[in-house]
Amino acid sequence: MGVDKKSVEQIIEGVGGKENIAAATHCVTRLRFALKDEGKADKEKLENIDLVKGTFSSNGQYQVVIGQGTVDKVYNQMVEMTGIGHASKQEIKDAAAQKLNPFQRAVKTLGDIFIPILPAIVTAGLLMGINNILTGKDIFFEGRALVDVYTSWADFASIINLIANTAFVFLPGLIGWGAVNRFGGSPLLGIVLGLMLVHPDLMNAWGYGAAQQEGNVPSWNLFGLNVEKVGYQGQVLPVLLASFVLAKIELFLKKRIAEGFQLLTVAPIALLVTGFLSFIVIGPVTFAIGNVITDAVVGIFDAVPAIGGLIYGALYAPLVITGMHHTFLAVDLQLIGTTGGTFLWPMVALSNIAQGSAAFAMMFVNRHNDKLKGLALTSSISAWLGITEPAMFGVNLRYRYPFIAAMAGSAAAGVLVSLYGVIAPSVGVGGLPAFLSILTEFWGVFFIAIAIALVIPFVLTAILAKVKK
Image 1 (cartoon, rainbow, N blue to C red):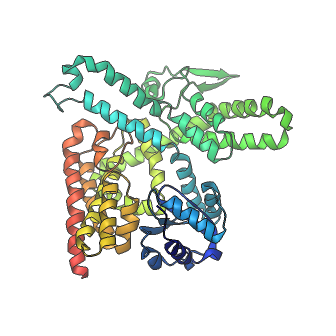
Image 2: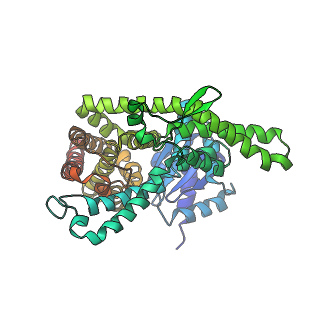
Image 3: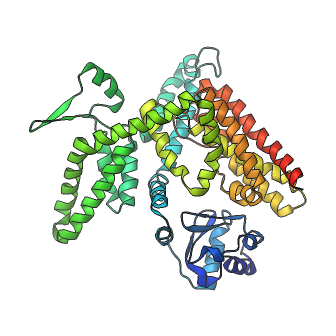
């Protein structure tokens, strides 16, 4: 089925005309524009077009939400009409990045590193959730797990756990791939670097604290310099900084070594230098910094859990608008690697649910507006399954008060899970299925928090709608 050419023309006019489009591409659901002047984009005009489900600006890109299955047809039609030529996502990112300030570029860099590896991490979290169901006590039988009663399932659960844990055990390898690729180096060298930091010959980082207290941390003697022989399992900062150094050394060498000798010299020199720097300087320093960050975040939530939950629960959705939420994925992974679980991820899932509930309320508030009613229904379901984009940008932010209601519901639910110390052993799926990523002993509290995230935004949106009318 084709798309209406008139609607595509209206989209082009809505973003300021073809002369205002520096470059354009699309993802699964959105058109992504690098506009010469975003001030010329007419948000109201765009959102009145039948094809458009919402608009927003993020990281220097002006994005128009169209929907899966239709966006590629709209894009191809737009390219044909404007003659702008097809552009890759990276070209759009490069064009948009020129408008960002240093802080925004840093946030964008973290997003570029972690977003590509997110599917592996989410998949691992989901599989760990299945393992939790099989091995958790008091779910099916009082005081016993399913594998305790049906022992033939024990090895099945063990294999699932091995598959799920792989992404977290070798997390530095994934981050190394994403980071070196982002910094312009060879992704394969990034994988080698990451795996080098968790090599089996190194002492496991999770046993470092106990070994340090006992005074038996293994070490190398490099010409009189003692270097601790410790791995960096579950750590984020060491591999991030080491990847940056590796990429810059590789690029430096490639500019100065003849192409015929690069295969035999560039990678060995880059890995050797980065490896020594990683174990002597980068690893110990960033490991200490990571522990300080972890202790600070944990300390805040230990000292005033209600305030921590209130603030993070309320502000997570606004962070999504700015793109800063990607930085907290690194914090989640650092918490998991250091403490064995994260108390931030449960609040992310509750924020998803709250946005969906507010959008669902808008379906009833605007029951006479067929377009908005349909968008509200589909976007609320999407948010309840962990994808909040259509609900946030297509419905809630457009009318503002549903977004505020969702923030209030998310904050209330965040207070509850923080007070009870709800923990997720992994970053998993968001929305309603997120209970799979929560330790089973916290399911009761988490289900109550889900109810809060469903009810408060819905009721508050309905009330605010009546007040506004």
